[in-house]
Length: 195
Image (cartoon, rainbow, N blue to C red):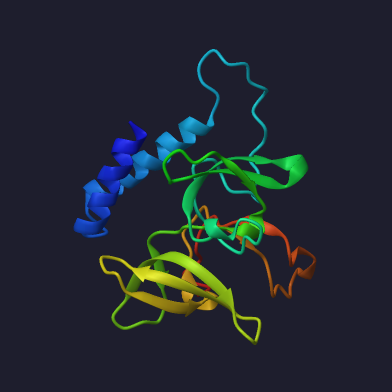
């Protein structure tokens, strides 16, 4: 069911407006099926559910591989998280390519694919999907976004983006509680009043 639904979602992504309910529904259904595929099946023994971690990506999260040195041919391949192995600090990811075996990668080698990312202060407003990132000479992080409904790529600084809830980020630049700098966390909400 998952490959068929993925194909339908891809067709919807190319042909429907980003806010069309069928497109959103197909994308949500694909993510739910991926999360279920990463969970134990009925009848399998399971441990007690671990408390929710806010520093790791959830099973089913869409990712793109990057900065791989040993298997550089896999860079820019997309897939999804199957699970996180805590003791090894590695994600097991399943690539979208046919017959691909799951692989273990560090969080530094994956970028969460985020859809419906708002680029702030642009006229006209821009919504897109994060496809890549890079650090410039001044240590600023820039993200490449594919503009919704087009093949156009734009680059935006991290401070220009409103990331959706559920995005895992690394905290930097905190002055009120600097001990948290470098920690990984999950975005819960966007505070419009704070900007």
